[in-house]
Every structure is written in structure tokens, then in C-alpha cells.
Image (cartoon, rainbow, N blue to C red; front, side, top):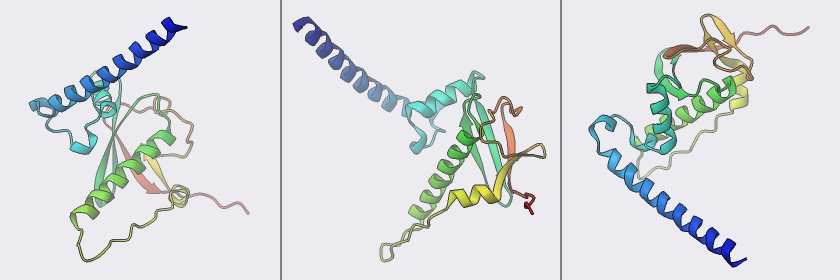
Length: 163
């Protein structure tokens, strides 16, 4: 019993040391010239891993055109589904919205955070790729024919009403 406890304690200590060393390495990497273009809020291990996979051809960069609004850029794994893409899209929009609110903040006024009903949005809008509306959430990006630097449109979803 005592040997197992000692081994567990060693593993716990090693894990804490590794985590601290990883944080130090990430802090050093922030100041490297080739990583300066990464935004502060994106500078985490998951994003850097995705960026590495994109550079080696194992991830997709998807640009979502929203008409007159700014384009959203998403890095995502090729085996992800349309539903995963929607989740990433929502995250990016929330980051964009929160950054805009922080820049326009008045100390005297509290800005009420608007609630977006995403169920309603996804019933009315969808992604479109090469003229095809992507409505099947279980479809993987590979099956849909996505490649690196794919451009999608965020369009109103027109559906036939059942009578």
C-alpha cells in the first residue's frame, strides 16, 4: 500500500511541475517574433496546437462571409462536424461582441448584454458552401468536401413549409 501511495505522490508532483513548466514556456513563446500575430485571447495551448496542425495540413481554416459584416476566421479539425463548426462560430461571435462592448464601455452606463437565441438563429440561417446549404449537423467537414482555406456564406435558410 505504501509503495502505491508514494508512486501517486510522485506522479502528482511531476504533473504540477510539468504544468508550471508549460506555463513558463507559453509565456516565453508569447514574446517570440513568429507568434506575435496571435491575439492575446487566443494564446492558449489548444489554439497553438490547432495553428500547428493547420500549418502542417491537419486542420482547416474556414472563412465565414457574413455579407457587409466582417468575415469570421475559424481554425478547426477536419473530422469535426457542422455542429462543431457552429459552436466555434458562436464562440468567435461572442468574442467579437464582447471585445466591441469592452472598447465602447462608459463608466457611467452599464451595457446590458443582449441575449441571442441561437436555436432561433439556426432555424432561420445556415452555412452555405458552393451553393449548397449545410443543414445536416452530423455531416463531417471532410464529407462535405471542405479543404484548407474554405469560404462559407452565412445565409438565410429558405425551407418549404409542410401543408
